[in-house]
Length: 402
Image (tube, rainbow, N blue to C red; front, side, top):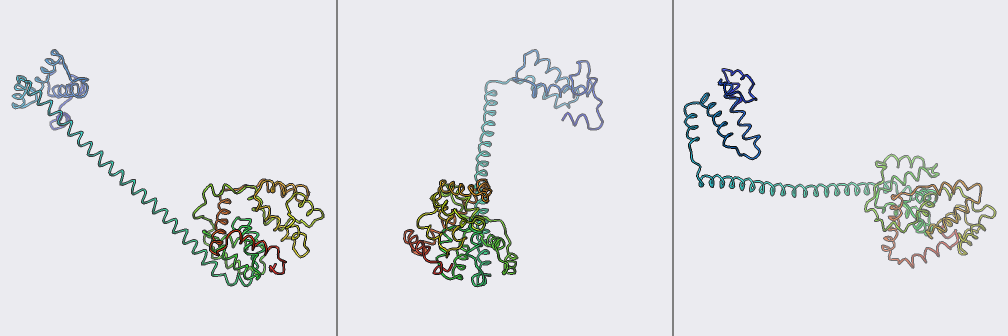
């Protein structure tokens, strides 16, 4: 209102002290009256601490405001001022004012309560929606993983016939896959138990196809890193359909599942391929040294000392036994064996410095889990399966197809 009075035509010139100060009693211009009303409004409503006035202050303020209303108000305003000055506020009026104030407060509280409940309802709905979105995101990720797995199986099937008939997968390729923690030494036993090369190739591919992740890209890497000179075009064709090189695991093993795997054993697993192809245990004194360190049992000694067993098969047999023991003592003894040969000291150092990630452990756990599932599917208990595999391993190389 004050703003309108100050700005409507005709414009009112500011009082001597401006519109924000209380004019002196002698200044009776319209602008001074506007400044008085503005000043006392701010004083009483905005700056009064307790809403109380002394009689002297009340009379002074009333006189100033009455003078201002008489100066710029109309006849009705003057009459209202006169009535207000003489009206008697009895106890009932005060009670009514108090009740009205209480009712207003209750309405405000009721409104705040309703708004609070409505807000709580919206908060609950938002939380439900967030959970729904999170659940949908998980489903989407699961579907993506399933699509990748189906894509992986489809890729294997596309090249399966050629891979089964024309390649050798159970030697260097399998060594690579073991070093990548994709296959296990137990998987190698399953594969080696078959007499025909094509059967061994097929078993290896079946194991990979049943992995709960996209194993095709890792398989292609293993093929590239192996001696596949006669299959260069095949590897090129396989590599051309690799769409996702990021390996994502589904149903990741829990911490208690991986707790039983010695990290030192995993270090040997990651060096499996290198050790098989670069360490010569046929060097004079090597086998005796390994036997003295109890890394070769009496049973294994017959196999690794046989002239019909290749150098690589000997070291594979040795490593598989150390890995199965899953003991730090065997790991330490093997590293001592390497350190005692000046040609292999560097290997021991690099093995010790190898980093092991949770991802490596999870891959090995998945391989172990899938091995148990295969046993159940085949109706073989662990006891009879081990007996069968052990007998096959003891058989001559010519029978095993090696």
